[in-house]
Image 1: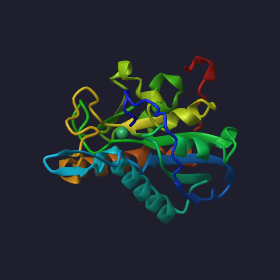
Image 2: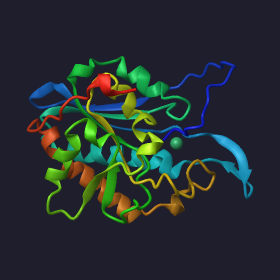
Image 3: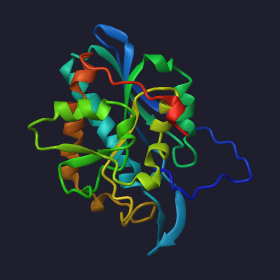
Image 4: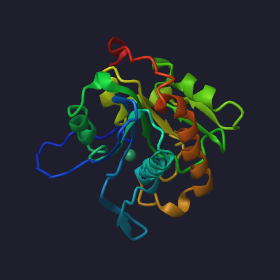
Length: 242
Ligand SMILES: [Zn+2]
């Protein structure tokens, strides 16, 4: 998740970076894509905190990358995805979303039926365990579809409770949403109080891995009717975006 205070720097340095993308072709609806994504970059080496200058980004966003790897394994084992599934680990999210911008130019956005961008799911949400929020919830009916598929599971998705923070625009989903794709970020991060956000202390030991496992399972269950082609979320109205 991008820091709201990050500003472009004046010097330009060329870096060779790459997204890492896997594709599971659809059985029938090959030209209809569903994207599961996260970002594998973080903010690098920074100001030492207690002698530690390496900012691991365990939550931001190794947790999201873990989710897409596990979902890829799950759908590969299921062997029944009618739509083509794309698992994308983006680079350069934190410095301005360059990985997802490049990615968005490699396919026609009209073919993308939904994008599940997963960011910072390693800590409990403000509602506690077995819950997460969806940024830009009201912009499409994707959240309602996911909720319907989770009925009776004990897991709930909520609309983003931090609207002032503009989280919808602070991750890689925004690039695709600006092209009309129903593209949302799923997160649990308490953006008003997360103690390790963009700190050297964002370490794996601070994560609730059992809860994170439940979140990943719930994303898989909630996505099922979109993966199968039964449900198709409404498009984002790009005129409403900033
Ligand atoms: Zn971040």
